[in-house]
Length: 193
Image: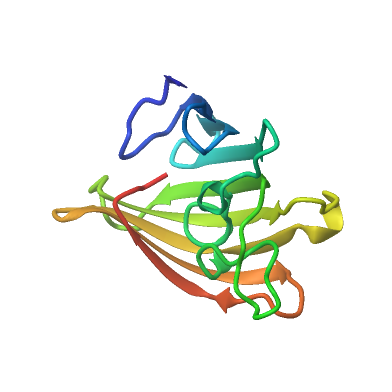
């Protein structure tokens, strides 16, 4: 990982590049690999220095090898705060015949956010944002298609509270499909970005 952001709590500029590779090797029964990539950019407007722009992209790919399948608990998931808000946490992607989410071996998520301070509050522990999130998860044998992408827009509040970082968001899906589990108001404890 390489992180040049100017703050972990209230970043206004910099970038984060995070590449991960996980491999299950013999003699264990789990033989798989899981590759993930995250690229995040933050910058502040020169004309409007109180605005910060955030662009985040994440890709993931996983598979088994040596004739072994990818273990189900190593699947990727999307939906919820930290991926595609306004959709229920980990609800996007393939489902079984009962409608339960299976996760998948491929994941793509993109986020664009405009961050700004709370009006009338000079405390940097609270920040507002407007966001556009998009992404999905695909399972084994599914063709990756742009038509599968889900997207949402909304507003969020980030607060570096005494109990830890809190994030509240209210989103509206702008691209969804029948059967998607919508959750407009969401909350997360422990991670601002």
